[in-house]
Length: 172
Image 1 (tube, rainbow, N blue to C red):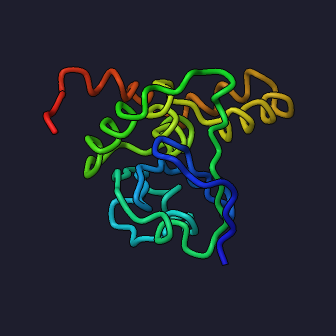
Image 2 (cartoon, rainbow, N blue to C red; image 1 turned 180 degrees about the vertical axis):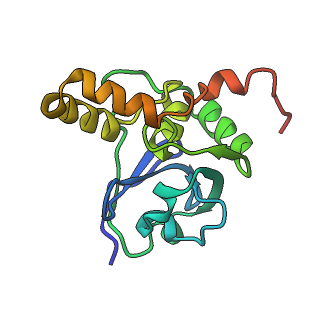
């Protein structure tokens, strides 16, 4: 049975617990979320499948929250509100809706589902999960070893979502 903490509002970030890193989605209302998942992933797999972490590409999908969560726990977690002001809700939702169906390069380090939703909510692509891992590895491996490792894994940085959507206004 899925656990739920907090009633989501449009523009809220949803953190979905699973084995390994949490999966992240953006609540857009009426029970739907927008999230980055493996292109051929079935609903619910994003919250439980490690395949999404291993896939080199992702697809932005709009699905029912209950389908994405499956049997996992989830909560509203606007974890960067203390650092950044959220963008206006209508901008968050319209930017998210414009991304639905787009295939993107996926990188656990700089282009994962948390990067996408934080970029939509705050205009800044961040993943505290990755930052925590980087800090811990820096402490244990040393800065030079960690830098060598990340440089060999990272392909290219995730473009800022708000920059990539400039000039793509649509009438609704």
